[in-house]
Image 1 (cartoon, rainbow, N blue to C red):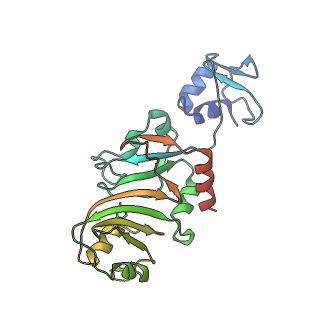
Image 2: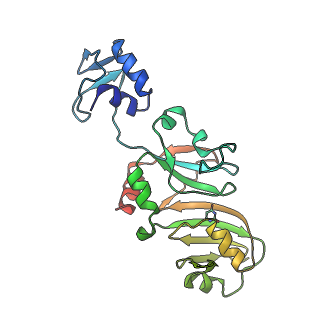
Image 3: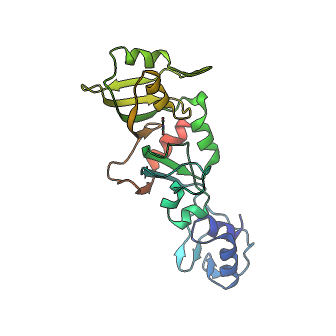
Length: 236
Ligand code: URA
């Protein structure tokens, strides 16, 4: 791969800035200054130092964000705050995007990556990637609600949900829902179908990866190597 691409992919600068800095003598390759941005490097073997810092090559990055309310996870409406704004510029430069969508008022775990294939596969209905949400709702759920969720709630014309696990707590106005798909406003529409209304919704886990409880709304961190492995296996 080209030297300027390796530097830019590490997230430090844009490709253009990397090329200019290399020409300026700000990078070394195996201890020697190189001034050709197109010099071929082997990320696994060559030691590249840029502005005094070794470049650690990562093909993809995976980030866990605790999405706060008020942010959108799709770019449909540019006037609203977008989840990517919560990440530092080096991640935005890499072209990270959210794996799936959460409604503007939904909080909780949102994974962001630049690994398009894994993201796409995690969202494919064929892979049945599990998502757990905690909820509160307006009225106590009826006794047969669990069975209704298990048998597949009809949320629209020709729109039947896959079996979902509803686990209300003793009050039956709060609990968790586990889905293996992600239809538009799915949980809200499922509750509406039961004559109820969701009053808060938070994603607690995605593909078996729980939201780190130490992350406050708006905070993020990269996935650990174990979490990344879990995500990649879910996408296989
Ligand atoms: N279901 C919803 O209704 N909204 C979300 O954000 C996620 C699941």
